[in-house]
Image (cartoon, rainbow, N blue to C red; front, top):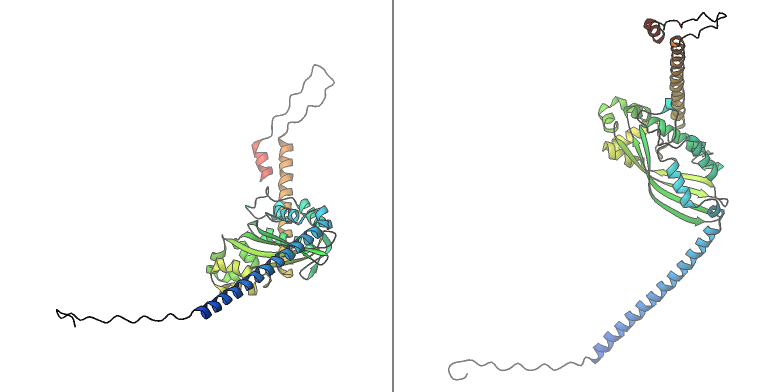
Length: 326
């Protein structure tokens, strides 16, 4: 103890430096091993990139050499399909839903020509053979919905053995009315609250489809994968109601296609309505022609006397015209 009562602590002894040479060697060896592994991984990835680039070039050359590239590229096919069927199938005026933009729908002849140009006659569509099934489904959808609009989302092309696979993703916007619900889900009319959730709404059906092209550049198989459950669930808000709708409706549960028996019924109903409308138009046309003939002035008969002239008869009475139009 020093003077003044202050306690002095003895200095701490210095720790001896440990020999770090062995630890440093282990650290450097570990880092070198990690670096070697990283460099090996980078070299392997670069080699894989070169292989994939070569494979991509070979596939591109193969696609360019296919007849599809000369008759029409897949991009052109997708563009034409979404252009031709953007607003659905063209229908006669008698079968066209009220409010459907007839001036926007592509003519039926061009739609037929599209399938004839790009699709083989024996194309497989689900369990059926021939593109008539696809045309029928477009016709059914166009007749039972108030409006249709086909939206393009994405496009992909892959090369498979001696063929080309074109996949597209799209959204079909469908205008629902009470008549649409009655046609597709007739059992739903017993639940007015459920009908109110669908009628007057736009149902957005997202889907993915696959078009298989042969070596000649024509479609030999078509596959459709719609997300109908999600589309209806977005509208009604209940998976139970969606299952109930699809369980007793006119749509196939695994696809958004209309069942064959329901399609035949819709076709017959549309033909009957078209016949009735045409009969009514013919009747009105005959009435118009009769009224026009009655309203036209009679031509004067030629006279043998040059000094004698005949004045035209007075126009028919209005009562006679009203009688003809009644």
